Image 1 (cartoon, rainbow, N blue to C red):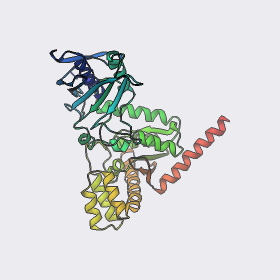
Image 2 (cartoon, rainbow, N blue to C red):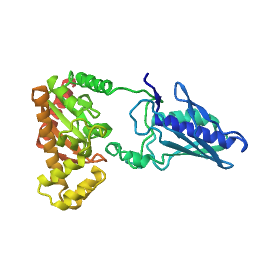
Image 3 (cartoon, helix red, strand yellow):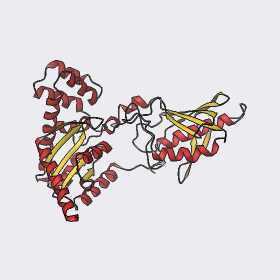
Image 4 (cartoon, rainbow, N blue to C red):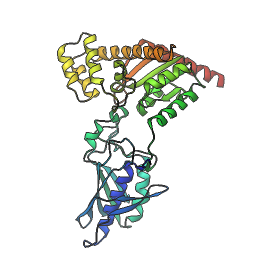
Length: 372
């Protein structure tokens, strides 16, 4: 039987709840082995690994992530909650992101709506009227784990996010997820035959900034190849690939499922592209020795070859994608590529992308005129 688990925000809240209860209990009280946690709308009993009073008004509690049978790199990672009760300020609760919690491009802790809602539901009722609870969530392994994710591509830096729309971590097969993306593509192509494949939330934002209608945007997850073929079979006229350069680089090496669990050759593809534009051995070595695509780009920028490499990479991704659709769908679809960095700044557009963008603009203008 498939085993469900809980999302990361649930464990963070449970740890915070255990810590605040510890602050309020006598020093001789037995620490809780678990806490009942409101995960909106259900409840969950979450084990507490450790909890200790640091002083009269401060405590630290630790839980461990259990996502069930999901393929999740946070499995068994510790989540710490440091809680201190202070004299009441203008807020009853102050929620902070400590070490290992990512930051958005604006510097704010990557703690999102659902996480904040369950903090409110679980912690606010426990705070005395004359106190403010300062809560700092710490993921000791968060910064290291984040290097194995695409967080940077989506604007989350230096750690993991407390993200989710539900407390339940319900396992879904790869086939289930892919079917959801296919269904969305099929619905989108009923409205327009000019599609924009958006890689992550940053891809959606960059697309919007380029003037692309939301009705043309298709989220792809890691299934770029399968969805390119689907677009061909559904007779799309064009597909614009809009994504983080470190993610889309894999397509330039013929890797059309971009999950790091499947394959990861982005640095090797970048290094090969350096050679193609006449870069020297020093630049190739710098790319291969980089830890991330973002670091590799900085090395290329230092050597004044970044623009040439990104332009060549975009053209190579387009060529590989065209060949992939022809091979597996036995049809042709116009493809263009736009690469951006982790903050959404565009690094390169190939010639096809410029043409396809004009198609999107013309379609948008036509619909606007029809409405008027």
